[in-house]
Length: 293
Image (tube, rainbow, N blue to C red; front, side, top):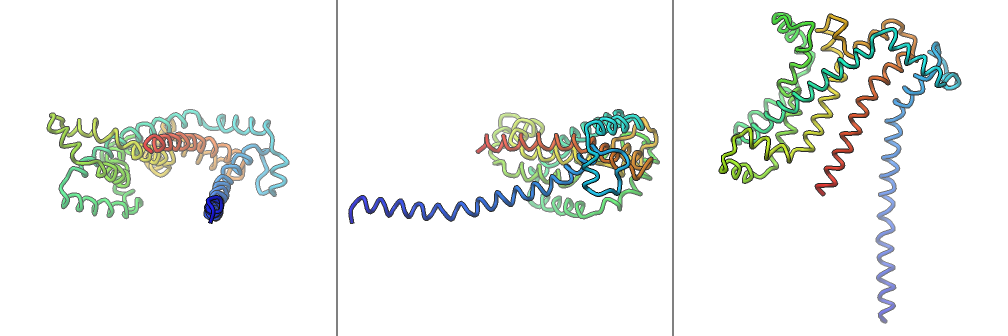
């Protein structure tokens, strides 16, 4: 067999091998696009509905689309800020979420780092406790927490809303930091200790710089946790000046339950900041992954 024949067979085999591998890749891309469209549909429906004319409730999709217009959108968004102090509620929610995220990152990373430095038996015990706490329904704690904060005189303040952040907000956040810190070689911490580093310096200078994925994930999840919180503000806040955006949306719903364009406009105002934070965190995480790779 000549050399040219061997090269031709080699090329033929290469093409034969590469051909089938493209089909599964194309299928995965099409599946991802389909799932993305399916997940984006509620957001698109919310946007279209907020652009509709007031009074389009219970109409068909064609009738709703026929009344869509920028003039309607301007009227709807102006109206929701007029009937309730939505701008103030927005700032209140932003304050609670920002402070909640900062405290959560601090306390959850502390707890996760402390767990990662404990002996194996203590780590297993704390992991078991964390799993039990994760399985405990939040509704079982509402009455106890309400009575506790009422006894402390902390009702009608942001303290009950931010109290979970003082304990990491969720055992899941602590475990995310714990699993990230456990992957760091012990030799790095031991070397820092030999140079006189305290546990706090070890956490700040050795552990945190290598926990960017956990920081981004916990930051995003905790922001959504406090931004979307409705039950805690409803239980503890009495003054309208302290209301968050979730309570403002509930006020609009209580005023007119059938005025769907206004409800969808208010819901979109509440959804957009969470969507922006998610996109920023995703971009930062992808950039970190690309840099690490």
